[in-house]
Length: 201
Image (cartoon, rainbow, N blue to C red; front, side):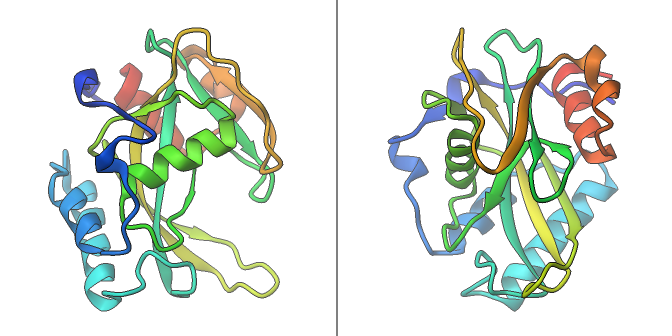
């Protein structure tokens, strides 16, 4: 899989005006419209995400939409683009990129940055404005919550040099992982895909 080129000059940090929260789903539509699908699978994910918003024009970004809802995540990379920070997710028991629910915020890049800061404890992260990957995946049922889909927009988030993480209560552990170390973490195909896009296959 070809490595994606990233324009780091477009990255923004918390407090930047264009990351301001909004409940208007037009913001999510605008973000998805700027995604150029690299293949048919990505094009289908984008169309399904836009169709979800069309079916739920007021609450596609809220977890109360039980068929599924928009989420946003970020692959946190070090400033030299040599490794990425993964979380061993407490609820799902998997090594994943960081991210979570929009909870009514349709600014998907802002959601990804917020979740990455909360889960990593690294305050001075910067997010690139356009998702570099899309994914739709099932979330298992839990008490009081049926199985549903996460319609996930994935962003690159860059950590400052020397960043030190803090493990939150959402994680069992965090780890900086180089591409050549990925197999020992038993990640799923979607996380492997993120590494291939960022670091090359």
